[in-house]
Amino acid sequence: MTPTSYDVRIWKTFVYQGVRKTTYSVRWCVNGKEFRKSFANAAQADAFRAELLAAAKKGTPFLILSGLPVNYESSAAGVSWYDFAVTFVDERWVHTSGNTRKTTAKVLMATTMALLKKQPATFQPVAVRTALREYAFNRSRRSQAPEEAVRILEWVRRNSPTMAVWEDPATVHRLLAALDLKLDATPVAASSVRRTRRVLNVVLTWAISRRVLHTNPLPKGRSATARKPANTVDKRSLPNAQQAARLLARVRSRPRGGPRLHAFFATLYYAAARPEEAVALRVADIRLPTQDAPNGWGELVLHTATPEVGGQWTDTGHRYEERGLKGRAAGETRPVPCHPALVRILRDHITREKLAPTDRLFQGAEGGELAGSVMRRMWRWARRSELTEAEYDSPLARRVYDLRHTCLTGWLNANIPPAQVAAWAGNSVPVLLSTYAHCVTGQQTELLKRIEQSQDLTPRHPAEEDLTGDLLVGSSVHAPWASEPLHDNAHATNVSVAEYPRPRHLRLVANTQADLRKRG
Image (cartoon, rainbow, N blue to C red; front, side, top):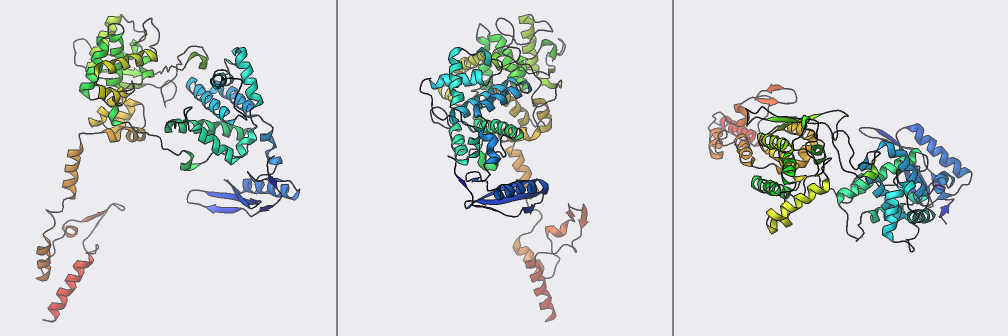
Protein backbone atom coordinates (compact mmCIF):
# COMPACT_ATOMS: atom_id res chain seq x y z
CA MET A 1 0.00 0.00 0.00
CA THR A 2 1.45 3.31 -1.07
CA PRO A 3 1.73 5.66 1.96
CA THR A 4 -0.47 8.78 1.79
CA SER A 5 -1.14 11.77 4.01
CA TYR A 6 -3.69 14.56 4.48
CA ASP A 7 -1.10 16.87 6.08
CA VAL A 8 -0.64 19.23 3.12
CA ARG A 9 0.55 22.85 3.02
CA ILE A 10 0.75 24.81 -0.24
CA TRP A 11 2.72 28.06 -0.47
CA LYS A 12 2.60 30.94 -2.93
CA THR A 13 4.36 30.68 -6.26
CA PHE A 14 8.04 31.55 -6.02
CA VAL A 15 9.41 33.68 -8.88
CA TYR A 16 13.11 33.44 -9.72
CA GLN A 17 14.48 36.04 -12.13
CA GLY A 18 17.70 34.70 -13.55
CA VAL A 19 20.12 36.20 -16.04
CA ARG A 20 18.78 34.17 -18.97
CA LYS A 21 15.21 33.38 -18.01
CA THR A 22 12.59 33.63 -15.28
CA THR A 23 11.13 30.50 -13.66
CA TYR A 24 7.99 30.07 -11.57
CA SER A 25 8.14 27.41 -8.87
CA VAL A 26 5.22 25.89 -6.98
CA ARG A 27 6.22 24.76 -3.47
CA TRP A 28 4.19 22.58 -1.16
CA CYS A 29 4.71 20.26 1.79
CA VAL A 30 3.26 16.77 2.40
CA ASN A 31 3.69 15.17 5.82
CA GLY A 32 6.63 17.48 6.56
CA LYS A 33 8.44 16.78 3.27
CA GLU A 34 8.86 19.73 0.91
CA PHE A 35 8.34 19.48 -2.86
CA ARG A 36 8.96 21.90 -5.70
CA LYS A 37 8.02 22.00 -9.38
CA SER A 38 9.22 24.74 -11.76
CA PHE A 39 7.50 26.12 -14.86
CA ALA A 40 8.53 28.42 -17.68
CA ASN A 41 5.59 30.82 -17.29
CA ALA A 42 3.26 32.01 -14.55
CA ALA A 43 0.09 30.57 -16.12
CA GLN A 44 1.39 27.00 -15.97
CA ALA A 45 2.52 27.43 -12.37
CA ASP A 46 -0.83 28.94 -11.32
CA ALA A 47 -2.75 26.11 -13.03
CA PHE A 48 -0.69 23.43 -11.29
CA ARG A 49 -1.02 25.19 -7.92
CA ALA A 50 -4.79 25.44 -8.43
CA GLU A 51 -4.97 21.66 -8.99
CA LEU A 52 -3.12 21.05 -5.73
CA LEU A 53 -5.38 23.43 -3.84
CA ALA A 54 -8.51 21.82 -5.31
CA ALA A 55 -7.35 18.35 -4.33
CA ALA A 56 -6.51 19.48 -0.79
CA LYS A 57 -9.94 21.15 -0.36
CA LYS A 58 -11.73 17.99 -1.56
CA GLY A 59 -9.87 15.94 1.04
CA THR A 60 -7.91 13.92 -1.50
CA PRO A 61 -4.94 12.13 0.09
CA PHE A 62 -1.47 13.04 -1.17
CA LEU A 63 1.25 10.49 -1.85
CA ILE A 64 4.16 10.93 0.52
CA LEU A 65 6.76 9.70 -1.98
CA SER A 66 5.91 12.06 -4.85
CA GLY A 67 3.87 14.73 -3.04
CA LEU A 68 1.06 14.59 -5.62
CA PRO A 69 -2.63 13.77 -5.08
CA VAL A 70 -3.63 10.15 -5.54
CA ASN A 71 -6.00 10.89 -8.41
CA TYR A 72 -3.30 12.97 -10.07
CA GLU A 73 -1.30 9.78 -10.69
CA SER A 74 -4.12 7.40 -11.57
CA SER A 75 -3.00 7.25 -15.22
CA ALA A 76 0.44 5.87 -14.35
CA ALA A 77 -1.01 3.35 -11.94
CA GLY A 78 -3.25 1.95 -14.67
CA VAL A 79 -0.56 1.44 -17.33
CA SER A 80 1.78 -1.55 -17.35
CA TRP A 81 5.45 -0.75 -17.91
CA TYR A 82 5.83 -3.69 -20.29
CA ASP A 83 2.82 -2.69 -22.40
CA PHE A 84 3.97 0.92 -22.43
CA ALA A 85 7.49 -0.04 -23.58
CA VAL A 86 6.09 -2.21 -26.39
CA THR A 87 3.82 0.62 -27.52
CA PHE A 88 6.74 3.05 -27.45
CA VAL A 89 8.80 0.76 -29.69
CA ASP A 90 5.95 0.38 -32.18
CA GLU A 91 5.26 4.13 -32.34
CA ARG A 92 8.92 5.05 -32.89
CA TRP A 93 9.88 2.16 -35.18
CA VAL A 94 9.44 3.86 -38.56
CA HIS A 95 11.14 7.06 -37.35
CA THR A 96 14.40 5.49 -36.17
CA SER A 97 17.41 3.85 -37.80
CA GLY A 98 18.45 0.25 -37.33
CA ASN A 99 21.19 1.08 -34.83
CA THR A 100 18.78 3.21 -32.78
CA ARG A 101 16.23 0.39 -32.76
CA LYS A 102 18.83 -2.07 -31.55
CA THR A 103 20.13 0.28 -28.84
CA THR A 104 16.60 1.05 -27.65
CA ALA A 105 15.76 -2.66 -27.42
CA LYS A 106 18.86 -3.34 -25.32
CA VAL A 107 18.08 -0.50 -22.90
CA LEU A 108 14.41 -1.49 -22.57
CA MET A 109 15.40 -5.12 -22.06
CA ALA A 110 17.79 -4.24 -19.20
CA THR A 111 15.26 -1.84 -17.67
CA THR A 112 12.46 -4.42 -17.78
CA MET A 113 14.65 -7.07 -16.15
CA ALA A 114 15.52 -4.66 -13.34
CA LEU A 115 11.87 -3.65 -12.78
CA LEU A 116 10.40 -7.18 -12.59
CA LYS A 117 8.49 -7.91 -9.39
CA LYS A 118 10.41 -11.18 -9.07
CA GLN A 119 13.22 -12.86 -10.92
CA PRO A 120 12.36 -15.76 -13.25
CA ALA A 121 12.54 -19.21 -11.70
CA THR A 122 10.94 -21.32 -14.45
CA PHE A 123 12.92 -19.72 -17.29
CA GLN A 124 16.62 -19.08 -17.67
CA PRO A 125 17.49 -15.36 -17.30
CA VAL A 126 19.35 -15.43 -20.60
CA ALA A 127 16.22 -16.76 -22.34
CA VAL A 128 14.14 -13.94 -20.82
CA ARG A 129 16.61 -11.30 -21.99
CA THR A 130 16.70 -12.80 -25.48
CA ALA A 131 12.91 -12.89 -25.74
CA LEU A 132 12.66 -9.25 -24.67
CA ARG A 133 15.41 -7.96 -26.94
CA GLU A 134 14.71 -10.02 -30.06
CA TYR A 135 10.91 -10.22 -30.02
CA ALA A 136 9.14 -7.99 -27.49
CA PHE A 137 11.01 -4.83 -28.46
CA ASN A 138 11.37 -5.70 -32.14
CA ARG A 139 8.21 -4.85 -34.05
CA SER A 140 9.17 -6.71 -37.22
CA ARG A 141 9.87 -10.03 -35.42
CA ARG A 142 7.31 -10.03 -32.60
CA SER A 143 4.81 -12.06 -34.63
CA GLN A 144 7.52 -14.63 -35.41
CA ALA A 145 8.33 -15.37 -31.77
CA PRO A 146 8.54 -19.12 -31.00
CA GLU A 147 6.25 -20.70 -28.42
CA GLU A 148 8.89 -20.61 -25.70
CA ALA A 149 9.43 -16.88 -26.22
CA VAL A 150 5.66 -16.27 -26.18
CA ARG A 151 5.34 -18.01 -22.79
CA ILE A 152 8.27 -16.00 -21.45
CA LEU A 153 6.76 -12.71 -22.59
CA GLU A 154 3.41 -13.59 -21.02
CA TRP A 155 5.19 -14.22 -17.74
CA VAL A 156 7.01 -10.89 -18.08
CA ARG A 157 3.71 -9.06 -18.68
CA ARG A 158 2.20 -10.56 -15.49
CA ASN A 159 5.24 -9.64 -13.41
CA SER A 160 5.82 -6.18 -14.85
CA PRO A 161 4.99 -3.24 -12.54
CA THR A 162 2.87 -0.27 -13.50
CA MET A 163 4.25 3.06 -14.64
CA ALA A 164 3.70 4.32 -11.09
CA VAL A 165 7.03 2.68 -10.27
CA TRP A 166 8.71 5.70 -11.91
CA GLU A 167 7.10 7.99 -9.33
CA ASP A 168 9.03 6.38 -6.49
CA PRO A 169 12.46 8.10 -6.22
CA ALA A 170 13.95 5.18 -4.28
CA THR A 171 12.94 2.70 -6.98
CA VAL A 172 14.35 4.94 -9.72
CA HIS A 173 17.63 5.21 -7.80
CA ARG A 174 17.88 1.42 -7.45
CA LEU A 175 17.04 0.97 -11.13
CA LEU A 176 19.77 3.33 -12.31
CA ALA A 177 22.27 1.66 -10.01
CA ALA A 178 21.38 -1.73 -11.51
CA LEU A 179 21.71 -0.43 -15.07
CA ASP A 180 25.20 0.83 -14.31
CA LEU A 181 26.46 -2.72 -13.72
CA LYS A 182 27.13 -5.61 -16.08
CA LEU A 183 25.86 -9.12 -15.46
CA ASP A 184 29.15 -9.92 -13.67
CA ALA A 185 28.59 -6.92 -11.32
CA THR A 186 31.40 -4.87 -12.87
CA PRO A 187 30.72 -1.25 -13.91
CA VAL A 188 29.71 -0.63 -17.51
CA ALA A 189 31.56 1.93 -19.59
CA ALA A 190 30.73 5.57 -18.94
CA SER A 191 29.69 6.00 -22.56
CA SER A 192 27.18 3.16 -22.15
CA VAL A 193 25.77 4.85 -19.03
CA ARG A 194 25.26 8.05 -20.98
CA ARG A 195 23.63 6.17 -23.87
CA THR A 196 21.25 4.39 -21.47
CA ARG A 197 20.27 7.69 -19.82
CA ARG A 198 19.64 9.23 -23.23
CA VAL A 199 17.29 6.42 -24.28
CA LEU A 200 15.41 6.48 -20.96
CA ASN A 201 14.99 10.24 -21.21
CA VAL A 202 13.36 9.81 -24.61
CA VAL A 203 11.06 7.07 -23.25
CA LEU A 204 9.96 9.07 -20.21
CA THR A 205 9.53 12.27 -22.20
CA TRP A 206 7.23 10.31 -24.49
CA ALA A 207 5.33 9.12 -21.40
CA ILE A 208 4.85 12.73 -20.32
CA SER A 209 3.54 13.68 -23.76
CA ARG A 210 1.00 10.82 -23.49
CA ARG A 211 -0.04 12.02 -20.01
CA VAL A 212 1.10 8.80 -18.40
CA LEU A 213 3.66 10.63 -16.23
CA HIS A 214 3.66 14.23 -15.08
CA THR A 215 7.41 14.69 -14.60
CA ASN A 216 10.65 13.06 -15.70
CA PRO A 217 12.00 11.19 -12.64
CA LEU A 218 15.56 10.86 -13.93
CA PRO A 219 18.14 13.04 -12.16
CA LYS A 220 19.24 16.18 -13.96
CA GLY A 221 22.59 17.93 -14.26
CA ARG A 222 26.05 16.56 -13.62
CA SER A 223 24.85 14.07 -11.02
CA ALA A 224 22.83 12.22 -13.68
CA THR A 225 25.97 10.34 -14.73
CA ALA A 226 28.46 9.60 -11.99
CA ARG A 227 31.40 8.94 -14.29
CA LYS A 228 32.32 11.27 -17.08
CA PRO A 229 32.72 9.44 -20.41
CA ALA A 230 36.01 9.78 -22.24
CA ASN A 231 35.55 11.99 -25.27
CA THR A 232 39.20 12.10 -26.21
CA VAL A 233 41.36 9.67 -28.15
CA ASP A 234 43.84 7.58 -26.21
CA LYS A 235 47.27 8.55 -27.52
CA ARG A 236 48.49 5.02 -26.88
CA SER A 237 46.10 3.71 -29.54
CA LEU A 238 47.68 5.75 -32.35
CA PRO A 239 50.33 3.82 -34.33
CA ASN A 240 53.31 5.72 -35.68
CA ALA A 241 54.27 5.59 -39.35
CA GLN A 242 56.50 2.53 -38.96
CA GLN A 243 53.92 0.58 -36.97
CA ALA A 244 51.14 1.44 -39.42
CA ALA A 245 53.34 0.40 -42.36
CA ARG A 246 54.12 -2.91 -40.68
CA LEU A 247 50.46 -3.66 -40.00
CA LEU A 248 49.30 -2.78 -43.51
CA ALA A 249 52.13 -4.80 -45.05
CA ARG A 250 51.16 -7.80 -42.91
CA VAL A 251 47.56 -7.54 -44.10
CA ARG A 252 48.70 -7.39 -47.73
CA SER A 253 50.83 -10.52 -47.28
CA ARG A 254 47.76 -12.62 -46.44
CA PRO A 255 47.05 -14.63 -49.61
CA ARG A 256 43.27 -14.85 -49.24
CA GLY A 257 41.62 -11.43 -49.06
CA GLY A 258 44.76 -9.66 -47.93
CA PRO A 259 45.28 -7.29 -50.90
CA ARG A 260 41.57 -6.35 -50.90
CA LEU A 261 41.54 -5.53 -47.19
CA HIS A 262 44.89 -3.77 -47.49
CA ALA A 263 43.26 -1.22 -49.80
CA PHE A 264 40.34 -0.88 -47.38
CA PHE A 265 42.56 -0.23 -44.35
CA ALA A 266 44.73 2.17 -46.38
CA THR A 267 41.62 4.22 -47.21
CA LEU A 268 40.94 4.63 -43.48
CA TYR A 269 44.56 5.52 -42.77
CA TYR A 270 45.12 8.00 -45.63
CA ALA A 271 41.62 9.54 -46.02
CA ALA A 272 40.15 9.26 -42.49
CA ALA A 273 36.99 7.58 -43.78
CA ARG A 274 34.75 5.87 -41.28
CA PRO A 275 34.51 2.10 -41.89
CA GLU A 276 30.81 2.31 -42.84
CA GLU A 277 31.65 5.15 -45.27
CA ALA A 278 34.48 3.21 -46.92
CA VAL A 279 32.25 0.14 -47.31
CA ALA A 280 29.69 2.27 -49.18
CA LEU A 281 32.21 3.66 -51.71
CA ARG A 282 31.74 2.92 -55.39
CA VAL A 283 34.48 3.03 -58.00
CA ALA A 284 32.80 6.06 -59.57
CA ASP A 285 33.18 7.94 -56.26
CA ILE A 286 36.97 8.08 -56.71
CA ARG A 287 38.63 10.75 -58.81
CA LEU A 288 42.13 9.59 -59.65
CA PRO A 289 44.75 11.62 -61.53
CA THR A 290 45.94 10.57 -64.97
CA GLN A 291 48.50 7.83 -65.42
CA ASP A 292 51.21 10.35 -66.36
CA ALA A 293 50.96 11.90 -62.86
CA PRO A 294 52.14 9.06 -60.60
CA ASN A 295 52.55 11.39 -57.62
CA GLY A 296 49.33 13.33 -58.15
CA TRP A 297 46.57 13.74 -55.61
CA GLY A 298 43.09 12.34 -56.09
CA GLU A 299 39.79 12.83 -54.32
CA LEU A 300 37.21 10.63 -52.61
CA VAL A 301 33.58 11.78 -52.65
CA LEU A 302 31.82 10.29 -49.64
CA HIS A 303 28.03 10.46 -49.74
CA THR A 304 26.63 7.29 -48.13
CA ALA A 305 27.23 5.13 -45.08
CA THR A 306 26.22 1.47 -44.76
CA PRO A 307 26.53 0.41 -41.12
CA GLU A 308 26.05 -3.26 -40.30
CA VAL A 309 23.11 -3.48 -37.86
CA GLY A 310 21.62 -6.93 -38.49
CA GLY A 311 18.73 -7.97 -40.69
CA GLN A 312 16.28 -8.15 -37.76
CA TRP A 313 16.55 -4.38 -37.23
CA THR A 314 16.15 -3.14 -40.81
CA ASP A 315 12.96 -2.74 -42.83
CA THR A 316 14.37 -4.66 -45.78
CA GLY A 317 15.71 -7.62 -43.81
CA HIS A 318 19.20 -6.86 -45.11
CA ARG A 319 21.89 -6.74 -42.44
CA TYR A 320 23.26 -3.46 -43.82
CA GLU A 321 21.34 -0.21 -43.64
CA GLU A 322 22.03 2.50 -46.21
CA ARG A 323 21.79 6.06 -44.96
CA GLY A 324 23.37 9.49 -45.36
CA LEU A 325 26.60 10.73 -43.85
CA LYS A 326 26.74 11.17 -40.11
CA GLY A 327 25.65 14.62 -38.97
CA ARG A 328 24.81 15.81 -42.49
CA ALA A 329 21.65 16.43 -44.44
CA ALA A 330 20.32 13.75 -46.76
CA GLY A 331 22.11 13.75 -50.10
CA GLU A 332 25.03 15.88 -48.89
CA THR A 333 28.54 14.82 -49.94
CA ARG A 334 31.95 15.17 -48.31
CA PRO A 335 35.02 15.39 -50.56
CA VAL A 336 38.26 14.15 -49.04
CA PRO A 337 41.77 14.45 -50.54
CA CYS A 338 43.29 11.18 -51.72
CA HIS A 339 47.01 10.86 -50.87
CA PRO A 340 49.32 9.91 -53.79
CA ALA A 341 50.19 6.68 -51.97
CA LEU A 342 46.50 5.87 -51.67
CA VAL A 343 46.03 6.75 -55.35
CA ARG A 344 48.52 4.07 -56.32
CA ILE A 345 46.98 1.53 -53.94
CA LEU A 346 43.45 2.10 -55.19
CA ARG A 347 44.47 2.09 -58.85
CA ASP A 348 46.18 -1.29 -58.40
CA HIS A 349 43.18 -2.55 -56.42
CA ILE A 350 40.68 -1.58 -59.14
CA THR A 351 42.84 -3.20 -61.83
CA ARG A 352 43.46 -6.39 -59.87
CA GLU A 353 39.78 -6.85 -58.90
CA LYS A 354 38.57 -5.85 -62.40
CA LEU A 355 35.99 -3.46 -60.98
CA ALA A 356 33.50 -1.51 -63.09
CA PRO A 357 32.60 2.11 -62.27
CA THR A 358 29.30 1.05 -60.70
CA ASP A 359 30.84 -1.72 -58.55
CA ARG A 360 31.50 -1.41 -54.86
CA LEU A 361 35.11 -0.45 -54.25
CA PHE A 362 35.50 -2.92 -51.38
CA GLN A 363 33.58 -6.16 -51.61
CA GLY A 364 33.32 -9.36 -49.67
CA ALA A 365 34.83 -12.65 -50.80
CA GLU A 366 31.64 -13.49 -52.68
CA GLY A 367 30.67 -9.94 -53.64
CA GLY A 368 28.35 -7.64 -51.78
CA GLU A 369 29.26 -5.55 -48.76
CA LEU A 370 32.45 -6.14 -46.84
CA ALA A 371 31.43 -7.72 -43.52
CA GLY A 372 32.56 -6.10 -40.31
CA SER A 373 33.47 -9.47 -38.83
CA VAL A 374 35.84 -10.12 -41.75
CA MET A 375 37.71 -6.83 -41.41
CA ARG A 376 37.97 -7.13 -37.62
CA ARG A 377 39.22 -10.72 -37.82
CA MET A 378 41.87 -9.73 -40.36
CA TRP A 379 43.00 -6.78 -38.23
CA ARG A 380 43.30 -8.93 -35.11
CA TRP A 381 45.39 -11.42 -37.06
CA ALA A 382 47.70 -8.66 -38.34
CA ARG A 383 48.21 -7.27 -34.83
CA ARG A 384 48.92 -10.71 -33.40
CA SER A 385 51.36 -11.56 -36.23
CA GLU A 386 53.25 -8.28 -36.46
CA LEU A 387 53.27 -6.58 -33.05
CA THR A 388 55.37 -7.58 -30.08
CA GLU A 389 53.68 -9.10 -27.04
CA ALA A 390 53.77 -5.78 -25.19
CA GLU A 391 52.40 -3.88 -28.19
CA TYR A 392 49.65 -6.43 -28.72
CA ASP A 393 48.51 -6.20 -25.10
CA SER A 394 48.50 -2.40 -25.26
CA PRO A 395 45.75 -0.24 -26.84
CA LEU A 396 47.98 0.30 -29.90
CA ALA A 397 45.75 0.12 -33.03
CA ARG A 398 43.40 -2.23 -31.20
CA ARG A 399 40.40 -1.12 -33.25
CA VAL A 400 40.06 -0.65 -36.99
CA TYR A 401 38.68 2.82 -36.21
CA ASP A 402 42.09 3.80 -34.78
CA LEU A 403 43.33 4.17 -38.36
CA ARG A 404 40.92 7.09 -38.82
CA HIS A 405 42.06 8.60 -35.53
CA THR A 406 45.68 8.33 -36.69
CA CYS A 407 44.92 10.12 -39.96
CA LEU A 408 43.10 13.02 -38.31
CA THR A 409 45.84 13.43 -35.71
CA GLY A 410 48.43 13.46 -38.50
CA TRP A 411 46.58 16.21 -40.35
CA LEU A 412 46.46 18.35 -37.21
CA ASN A 413 50.15 17.71 -36.58
CA ALA A 414 50.86 18.88 -40.14
CA ASN A 415 49.42 22.31 -39.19
CA ILE A 416 46.34 21.87 -41.37
CA PRO A 417 43.72 24.40 -40.13
CA PRO A 418 41.25 22.68 -37.79
CA ALA A 419 38.31 23.99 -39.83
CA GLN A 420 39.64 22.22 -42.92
CA VAL A 421 40.39 19.01 -41.02
CA ALA A 422 36.86 19.07 -39.56
CA ALA A 423 35.38 19.48 -43.04
CA TRP A 424 37.34 16.50 -44.36
CA ALA A 425 36.57 14.41 -41.28
CA GLY A 426 32.85 15.16 -41.20
CA ASN A 427 33.03 16.57 -37.67
CA SER A 428 32.42 19.98 -36.18
CA VAL A 429 35.44 22.02 -35.12
CA PRO A 430 34.58 21.84 -31.36
CA VAL A 431 34.24 18.05 -31.53
CA LEU A 432 37.47 17.74 -33.50
CA LEU A 433 39.48 19.85 -31.05
CA SER A 434 38.02 18.24 -27.94
CA THR A 435 38.76 14.78 -29.35
CA TYR A 436 42.19 15.20 -30.93
CA ALA A 437 43.82 18.40 -29.65
CA HIS A 438 45.80 16.66 -26.90
CA CYS A 439 47.25 14.26 -29.50
CA VAL A 440 48.96 17.07 -31.43
CA THR A 441 52.72 16.72 -30.88
CA GLY A 442 55.96 18.03 -32.34
CA GLN A 443 54.97 21.69 -32.13
CA GLN A 444 55.73 22.41 -28.48
CA THR A 445 59.28 23.66 -29.10
CA GLU A 446 58.16 26.23 -31.65
CA LEU A 447 55.20 27.30 -29.51
CA LEU A 448 57.36 27.75 -26.41
CA LYS A 449 59.79 29.84 -28.46
CA ARG A 450 56.94 32.11 -29.51
CA ILE A 451 55.82 32.52 -25.90
CA GLU A 452 59.37 33.27 -24.80
CA GLN A 453 59.77 36.00 -27.39
CA SER A 454 56.43 37.64 -26.67
CA GLN A 455 56.72 37.64 -22.86
CA ASP A 456 60.42 38.38 -22.39
CA LEU A 457 60.83 41.78 -20.66
CA THR A 458 64.62 41.77 -20.46
CA PRO A 459 65.26 43.90 -23.61
CA ARG A 460 62.64 46.45 -22.55
CA HIS A 461 63.15 46.72 -18.76
CA PRO A 462 66.54 47.77 -17.24
CA ALA A 463 67.91 46.23 -14.10
CA GLU A 464 66.23 47.27 -10.85
CA GLU A 465 69.25 49.12 -9.47
CA ASP A 466 69.63 51.13 -12.68
CA LEU A 467 65.99 52.18 -12.56
CA THR A 468 66.24 53.30 -8.94
CA GLY A 469 69.35 55.33 -9.70
CA ASP A 470 67.69 57.11 -12.59
CA LEU A 471 64.80 58.11 -10.39
CA LEU A 472 67.02 59.49 -7.64
CA VAL A 473 68.99 61.71 -9.99
CA GLY A 474 65.82 62.96 -11.67
CA SER A 475 66.38 61.43 -15.07
CA SER A 476 63.51 60.19 -17.19
CA VAL A 477 61.98 56.86 -16.32
CA HIS A 478 62.31 54.17 -18.93
CA ALA A 479 59.49 51.71 -18.40
CA PRO A 480 57.67 49.37 -20.70
CA TRP A 481 54.39 51.21 -20.16
CA ALA A 482 56.04 54.50 -21.22
CA SER A 483 57.97 53.24 -24.24
CA GLU A 484 54.98 52.45 -26.45
CA PRO A 485 51.34 53.59 -26.57
CA LEU A 486 48.97 51.19 -24.93
CA HIS A 487 46.03 49.78 -26.82
CA ASP A 488 42.61 49.47 -25.30
CA ASN A 489 41.20 46.42 -27.01
CA ALA A 490 37.69 47.16 -25.83
CA HIS A 491 37.52 50.53 -27.62
CA ALA A 492 40.29 50.04 -30.23
CA THR A 493 41.90 53.41 -29.29
CA ASN A 494 45.36 54.42 -28.10
CA VAL A 495 45.86 55.39 -24.46
CA SER A 496 48.58 57.94 -23.80
CA VAL A 497 51.15 57.60 -21.00
CA ALA A 498 49.63 60.57 -19.14
CA GLU A 499 46.26 58.87 -19.05
CA TYR A 500 47.71 55.62 -17.79
CA PRO A 501 48.92 55.85 -14.14
CA ARG A 502 52.34 54.63 -13.16
CA PRO A 503 52.64 51.90 -10.53
CA ARG A 504 52.31 53.08 -6.93
CA HIS A 505 55.89 52.27 -5.86
CA LEU A 506 57.28 54.48 -8.67
CA ARG A 507 54.96 57.34 -7.73
CA LEU A 508 56.23 57.17 -4.13
CA VAL A 509 59.85 57.33 -5.27
CA ALA A 510 59.10 60.33 -7.49
CA ASN A 511 57.29 62.15 -4.65
CA THR A 512 60.23 61.54 -2.31
CA GLN A 513 62.58 62.97 -4.93
CA ALA A 514 60.41 66.11 -5.23
CA ASP A 515 60.44 66.66 -1.42
CA LEU A 516 64.24 66.42 -1.34
CA ARG A 517 64.50 69.08 -4.04
CA LYS A 518 62.25 71.51 -2.11
CA ARG A 519 64.34 71.12 1.04
CA GLY A 520 67.30 72.16 -1.02
